[in-house]
Amino acid sequence: MNRRTLLKASALLPFVPAVDGQNIPSSTARKRSLRFAYLGDTHITPDSKPMESVAKCFQHAQSHADKPSFILHGGDVIMDALAKDRSDVQKQWDAWNSVVKANNSLPIEYCIGNHDIWGFENAKTDPSYGKKWAIDQMKIGNRYRSFDRSGWHFIILDSVQPKPDGKWYTGNIDAEQLDWLKQDLVKTGTKKPTLVLSHIPIFSPTGFFSDNNIKDGNWTIPAALVLSNTPELLKLFYQYPNVKTALSGHMHLLDRVDYNGVTYLCNGAVCGDWWRNDTYQQTKAGYALIDLYDDGTVERTYLQYQ
Ligand SMILES: [Zn+2]
Image 1 (cartoon, rainbow, N blue to C red):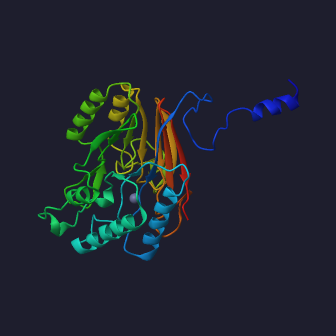
Image 2: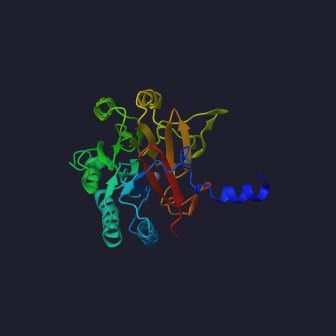
Image 3: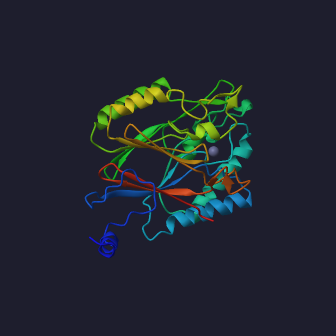
């Protein structure tokens, strides 16, 4: 084959899109099961910049000719409920609900983020204290759950465990939830492709870089950035080759780790640098289109909406 025929032949090869898919096979054998939009770390406030920007993000996500079928929200819907009083938190949820109502017609599936949890110290006896208020706003019924969609199994975890003072938290999957997760995986079996979502990453190198995590010359990565029981989760997932991908937010940074057959995707942030700048470190404010395939592969396309 000379150079010209080689070039001609290569033009006939399947088009491989500029996305970070996992071992994208060049055959046309796989079929896409579904496409959804991942939006996370929206950190909305009633101020005009966050409200207008989140509105734009929703509009952008729905503007594709090849439209996502739903929105998966990775948590930190509102700016912060941890240390705010009732009326302040109410204003943030109201801001969110009004932007959603005016700009979004897709179903939204939510995951709880640390900033969605009401930890205002004077509110400890209020029935909405802790995760209850967020669960009600998100209409999710429980802090963790699973469901099936288009041939995939979705597991939505609650990765944020407040410390007794309510204002600080650690990242882990508590014993009760871990039991449920094990049972859920047993029930699902080892064939159905499975996606796991947690607000705090299970496995992400951004934990090294999202903060100043060097103390006395050594890396010190807090469980607030990478779950403290990640080793246990990695062992669990290893028993289930159908666990294909694990999504997260929280870091406001974009990364991808392929480990033991699982693609771990940390998916930036709609708010960028908490609305101060449209870039946090080297990650631009944005959202992701996620395509899941029937052979368990996943592709992510991270997009800016401004
Ligand atoms: Zn956040």
